[in-house]
Length: 58
Image (cartoon, rainbow, N blue to C red; front, side):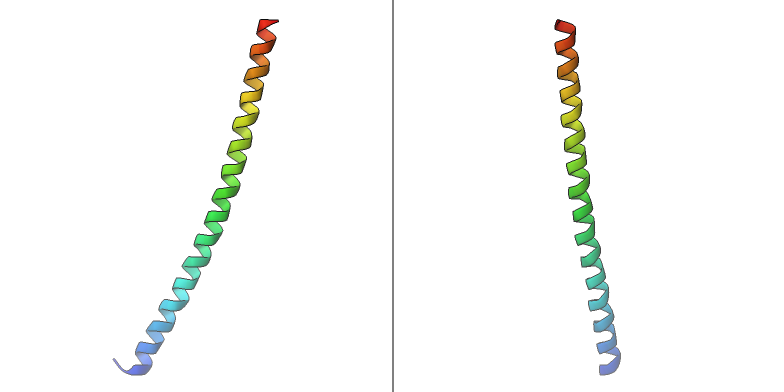
């Protein structure tokens, strides 16, 4: 394999690595957003259950 072909492979690898890194950053951001939404929904559910329990006691 000549030097030019090797450089082409290295460039392709570096480019693919950059794409994978970008995708990873995006997925991590999506995961944080989904976790925040889940936390909020769980808190709302807890508040509704607490309210329901309070109503039953009255």
